[in-house]
Structures are given as structure tokens and as C-alpha cells.
Length: 280
Image (cartoon, rainbow, N blue to C red):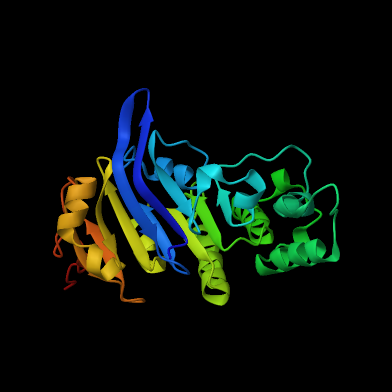
């Protein structure tokens, strides 16, 4: 049985369908990445699978049950989502934010417990945020802030985590930092991770399973080395490119052609040094 899947999903905005009959099964315990051009529906699909958007037809099935019929807390114990660019109330500390991840386990009869505290401290340690736990979230760097939000989703202790463009607005160092953290969590705990990413090369490096979306349908899906080629990139992104093996990881590496004037090897060769005039 699949952990998370869409069955005949129909999603629309303003009467215009983005997806009309989409079916998708997310591999359990793997890292799945949605790719596609802007406006193709990647984030819409992710949000619908987290029950943040109600489908006009079809259903999202979470661990064998229609997610629409589940209680909010029941869903939150099984699935966590980190939306794009989450906002934090001013003055909230990292520790207070991460504690929000334990909300699904609180009730009038069951207040804060040692188990909750252990989960929060473990999430802070896993994301390298323990020493920053008393800092306010709005005082952190972009990478630290993103790690704080990821710590909150980890503290939620769900078998599935969905992230909408978790590397947006981060510099390259912090992008790698965040993706390494998610990769390590997936390998160590076998949590199912589903992400939307814009960078094709990072998607190929970190994904076990890629879902390429174009014009409201799934163009292709599967392991990166079976899915990503020049024809797919041109079809999905309308971009000509060359695909080669990443020299470090062996995953597909996209080299875009672009439309500018190319510099030839001769053009970028080291300039010749002018010899001084001979003195007689």
C-alpha cells in the first residue's frame, strides 16, 4: 500500500483546471522531487496532497484513507508540510517555533510531556540549532531560519514531510546545507520526503524519484538517470541543453545552451604576452 497518492485529482483556479485527472503515487521512504516550469502546478499539487487545497474531483489518499475525511490532528501526526516562505511572528524564539511541531499531540488531557521535550531537543540537535534555540527566528540568517522551520517539521515526527521550494532565496552554501540535512534525515530515519525544487541539477543530485510536470500532467517520472535527458528538458522547460554526468556524484548534470553568443575555446584561451622590443 502506498503511503501517499493522488487518484484522479482535479484542481482548478477560477474555473480553469490546472490538473484534470492526475494520478500519482509517492514512493515510501524515498526523496521525491517535483520539477517543471513556473506556473505548471508543482506547488499546487504539493499543497493539495497536504490537504491545504481542496480538489474539485478525485482524492488524496494518506495511508489508505481519504485525507479529506481525516481530522486535522490525525493528518498532522502523519504528514508535515513546510510551505514556501513561511512567516514567523515577531519575537518568537527558535525553541518556541520548534515546540509548535508538537501541537498534534497536545490535548486537554495530555499536556506537555517528557516525550514532547525529547522530540524537540532531538529536532534541534539534528538541525544544528541547539545553540541558537533562545535566539529569535527573525534575527537568524536565511539558512538558519530555514533550518529552524525544518526542525519544527522534524519535531512533528511524521513519516512524511512535504516542502515547497525549501531552498528559495538561499545562497548556494545554504541550499546545500538544507538539502544535505533533508537527505541525511531521509537516509537515517527512512522518512518520506517530497519537495518542489527549481534547480534541476540539485534535484538530480538529491532525488531518488523525480516527477516532471508539464501543462497540467505528469510528463515523466522515475529515477533521475532514467528520466532526465535533453529531450525532456526541452519539452518541459523549452530549453536546449546538454546532459552529462555530474563529475562528483554521477547524477545527470544539465548544461543549458542559452541564446547568447558562445565563447569558443580559442576565445577563452590565455592571452599571449607581448614580448618587449629587442634592444640593440
